[in-house]
Image (spheres, rainbow over the protein chains, first blue to last red):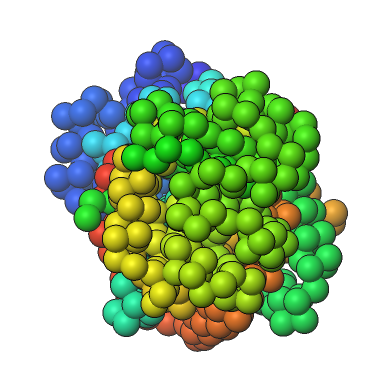
Length: 301
Length: 301
């Protein structure tokens, strides 16, 4: 499929794509650059890449596909450098979880010809562990990848990026950039923010009430995503701030509705409200319904 | 341990206790009453009880331990009838998830002597499935049971109830009634309300934006508990209304803080906020840290 993949960022996201493509014989050679020397040497040692490069320009030389797998906040510098060295025939795609900010930076730095060959994407996968040691060839199997092609992209280049992701087991969909950021704010960014806030909310009570001794089952599930990487989530909040604020306001309004129902002890309204929510969720995750078992309290003392 | 257990409510909670005590040889005979005939016949057929009773008075006759395992809202009627027929030497305990409302009804109906023998309790267990078919002897193993003894209880009676729960594998703790309701509001009731609200919030957007197609990982975890029984949760909200309202206000204030940080794009504050929440949660669930793996999107199409 590709002759040479240049990985910019050799952590979980980039490393897993490289492993998956290599395992399936879809790439000839992989050259990897990461800002830190130890990261790119680890990537080489772990077999994610064939050789490390000491700069972005060294990494992309001779590449026909470039994957930008750095944190979104690093994209500005990365795109700035890429603009000076991207081979004329290389396709570029990325793995950033917010698309608007990435596309805006790409438009700022890349030439028109380069921009046409940049197909923005977002693989919705990832474990809360990170780094090259966490990479696995199976990371994307069964996962969704959202491509957000821009007007400048040619259909055949979008198709090649789609085929790349499908080759590693992902299901590819397309959204426009703004819709992507809106949808991710609603289905991922807001829930993460709300989970962090729930843990924090309880922590403020905890000193006085030892509430955490009883934080079992429901709380564990609800807050699982609050164990995610705070740096990554800080960046997502900054990069998708407007959408997340809109979703947060939407959620607060919902909580206000619920508060009113509780305040007036309106049992019928509360029951309908919960029943509708249950119906929606059960329709979303039918396979998961069988999985609703209680868990023993796994905490010690 | 006991000669005859009278089960009032032969569903998951009562049925599982009966099975567990029987399996361990801790009870001689179990008589069960449920409002519906088919439920108590099912309990007999499934071996949860030795024989069904057609009324509460028939069930408790000759019993030395009575377990009230009905929904909290049924407790008023149950306690009213129990007051007319409770044997003089029978201990009573319950499984209601809200204690204040139950104790208040017990004080309204039971005589002083009867009240002294009523040791309120809350086994924190349960699957989202219910009914006698769901009962299992292992339901309480490794789970916490919170007893909320009242001033009238004798220490030796509290100890007997504690021993009963320990015999079926539970870890027993004691809290006073108000503290119990406060803690459960914070660690269980609010998270459930917040999860229902999150699903509902997204559902309002869904018609316009097909957001649900992308509702994977984080949303799935956050909203798992929104697949819980809406009737049970309606009753919990009504019975623990004041505490839940207080927690809801506390949570909304927390979301307001977060909103302010986002509004002002304060990256440092956001990162600290998330990092503190992560540290708290990781300390709560150390075993769960290894479990943070991504899930393939299990939804069809």
